[in-house]
Amino acid sequence: MLKDITLGQFFPGNSIIHKMDPRLKLVITVLYITALFMCHGPVPYIILGGILILAVALSKVGFRQVTRGLKPILILLVITTLFNVFYTNGGQVIFSWKFITITDYGVYNAFYMVLRIALLIIATFTLLTYTTSPIMLTDALESVLSPLKKIKVPVHELAMMMTIALRFIPTLLEETDKIMSAQKSRGADFESGGLIRRAKALIPILIPLFISAFRRAEELATAMECRCYNGGEGRTKLRVMKFAMRDYVILFVSLAVLALAIYSDYTCTFGVILP
Amino acid sequence: MDNIIEVLNLTHTYGADTPFEHTAIEDMSFEIKQGEILGLIGHTGSGKSTLIQHLNGLLKPDSGMVKFCGRDIWDDKQFTREVRFSVGLVFQYPEYQLFEETVERDIAFGPTNMKLSEDEIRERVLYAARSVGLDDSILLKSPFELSGGQKRRVALAGVIAMKPKVLILDEPTAGLDPEGREEILNYIKNYNKETGATIVFVTHSMEDIARVVDRIVVLEKSKILMTGTPKEVFSRTEDLIRAGLTIPVAAEIAGKLAKKGIPVSPAIYTIEQLADAISTLYAGGGKNA
Ligand SMILES: Nc1ncnc2c1ncn2[C@@H]1O[C@H](COP(=O)(O)OP(=O)(O)O)[C@@H](O)[C@H]1O
Ligand SMILES: [Mg+2]
Image (cartoon, rainbow over all chains, first blue to last red; front, side, top):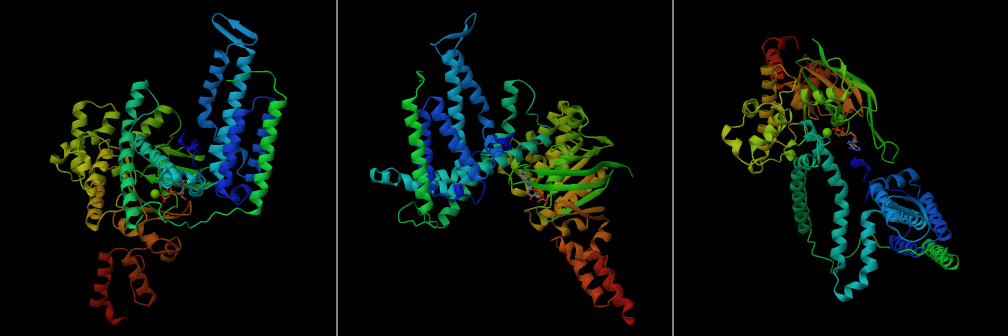
């Protein structure tokens, strides 16, 4: 169960995607998401889906891993489908029974919304985090957002918070697993009973989990203070990020592909209005 | 003696089909006898914790089988749940699983899940607390205001209160001072004597188990390296060292003496045995040497 949550997990590797400058990855991902929400028709989606498949193939993390990342949001996808199918007005009615009507717009909307969310999750939460270590990712974020420091946005502090949060996701999951096993050994039952009983059954997990999270937070804070950490001012980096020739090529190619997707969206729309 | 638990060709792989795939247990077979204290020893990462989670049905074998009283524990759902109660598992650092407002209620968590009567629960809580040397006055305190050693014993009592037929302890002495270790070892030994319960004692420290266990299973890199009485196991010093284990000081000294041609048995593994052997050498054997 908890094993399915791969959020924030990093698979070390040596592929071209792993080696890309993390800032570039971040920027391309943001542009990609923008393109996803600008496009509607089949042609742009074939282009956007295709380039993502290519990126996954190049990253060598395996399609199995990537689709596994979709598992936790399966429910979200199902709900999205239902809402779009039943609550879209307009278009031709293709099915009608009592108060339920399904229109072709609804089906069309549902299809693209699900595709959009799936591609978005694959691009960000799986491909990006699988191939970029959390430290690289937050370093990149800090660097990309650093102009905001001029208007007093605490970029470094935010990045540090994110680093720590990402660092502790696997730890906390592991800990949850351990505590659950321990309580199961004492006969705790998380699988049967109504909603209230199940919610109550979580108490023996949540309390030890919170206590240990606070303990860890305190230990970490102490350790950081012992090493004289006092914010971003004048702090230098161990890993200095540098744009390689490869990165310029990737940037150019990606921009071209995304531009093509958006262009094709304008030239061959299928006359469907989307929210 | 009957076998209470049998492990047959057990294999378990973590993260199958991912880059992190790791076979933590590979084709292991051994048995645990009714009423014995079995030591399960192995270097960190050798698969001890993974193995014991199979013994009470927390983990399901990828292949192979675990039998409790002759029956596959995954035979049916009801039986698996029964096994949970019959095979008590105390995790490593169990003090982090405490959650109740009072020590009493925390110890009662297991018995309550067993749906016992109030009186029975109360009786078991008192019994369990006493059997790990906790004073009755502690029962109404919050578990979070106790010392580390006391917390550990509360957690231990929480499992003992379920009166399991088999009590498995994962590194129960880890992180304790010598005095605390000694105490825990004694409670475990007493519990075994008093109730006749089978005990599985998991550790990576030879020193700990040398004095308490009847039999030892040594793990090395997901496999069983050897099985035998402490005498048999400790006489194979070199194999143990190769498996990354530190042998008891007494066994080490005995081994070194034996190598120098001084006639002490290489099967010595406690300080008392070593002292006896040396004093007999001085008393009589000296002339021959
Ligand atoms: N939940 C888990 N997921 C993945 N790998 C694990 C998990 N638990 C243990 N392992 C791995 O299995 C191996 C054996 O671990 P474990 O059974 O805890 O050994 P021991 O208790 O002897 O130290 C280790 O290499 C460990 O990294
Ligand atoms: Mg362990």
